Amino acid sequence: NFSLADTVLFKVDSGVAKITLNRPDSLNAIDHTLAHDLREATLQAEMNEDVRCVVISGSGPAFMAGGDIRAFKERLGKELDRYMIDVTHDLHDAIMAIRRMPKPVVASVHGAAAGAGFSLAMACDLIIATEDAVFTLAYSVIGASPDGSSTYSLPRLIGYHRAMELMLLSDRFGVERAQELGLVNFAVAKDELESETKKLTERLASGPTFAYGKAKALLGKSLERGIGDQLDAEAQHIMECSRTADFAEGITAFLEKRKPTFIGS
Image (cartoon, rainbow, N blue to C red):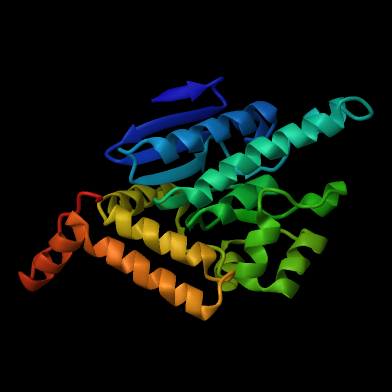
């Protein structure tokens, strides 16, 4: 367990890595320090073999309200180019760790998920959000194009025209619309977010981690392969799952009509 310059908190508890964005006074707006520390936290979660599920949340009144506009303003006409590259590269390293790690990553969203916060949430495998959560891409409001992988995830999640609508218009929308679009899995009352997130992550952490990783890898490549290559990958991955202790436990428990106890391998 550690904190990185206090901007990102990292804790592992019962197989769940909890990554908390911690700039509440700025609604967790992302600056270079937060981007760097988020990168470090996601890499720690990816490499830690004790971690079987990851949850990303925000402290204070919001998940993440996008980029730190004041930090951009301070650098106008000076080192802004370099700063933007540094921030996005660290953010993108974190996104790649989220997509690459063979374990489920949950975004637990309350308040605003705007700009990079929206992109970060969309990069996660599952999203649980409060009923008063607000989503917006927001980039076009400041004359910017999106980062944080939303131009990759959104066309795959909702199609080209709806993705373009969100990117060009930057309208704000609530969790009901987010669920209609297929962007949010679960909507919960504001005072139940922590408990419902805990239930979900504990369930995932007690599941068959190796099989989850293989399913995540298959979905991650499914839109880039032809059906033949995808079927070959499915055959390879289910064969690899069949070698694990979890598979033996799963089929034994099924035949014995009891709940399986998975160990993650």
